[in-house]
Length: 152
Image (tube, rainbow, N blue to C red; front, side):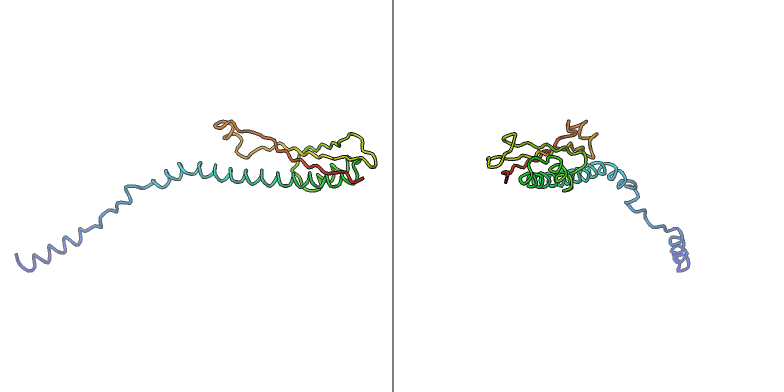
C-alpha cells in the first residue's frame, strides 16, 4: 500500500463517518407515557390533601364559632338569634346550621342551667366523583358542640 492510497482511504472513511445513534432515541416518548400513568395519582393525592385541609379548617372554625355562640348565650340565654349571629359572624363555612338548647328549657334567675350550641355542616369533597365511585365516600357531616354554664 502506498502512502497516497493510505491517505485517500482515511479521507474516504472520514467523509463517510457518521456519529453513532444514541440509545436515548430508542426510548423517545417514554417520559410522556410515565407522566400519563403517574399524573392521575399525583393529582388525586394533591386534591385529597387540599380536601383534608378544608375539612380541618372548617371544623376548627365551627368549633370556635360554637364556643363563641355558647359564650354569648351564657350571658343572654334567651337571645337565640343573637347566639346564631355570634356563631355565623365567627366565620363558619357557608350553609352551616346552628341549633341552641338550654337545660332546663326555661332559664330563671338563680337556676343551675346550661346552654348547648350545636353547629353542623355538610362537607362536599373536591374529588367527590372519584371517591364515591371507588371508595363509597361522598358528602359527610361535620358537627361541633359547645356547652357552657348560664351566668344569670
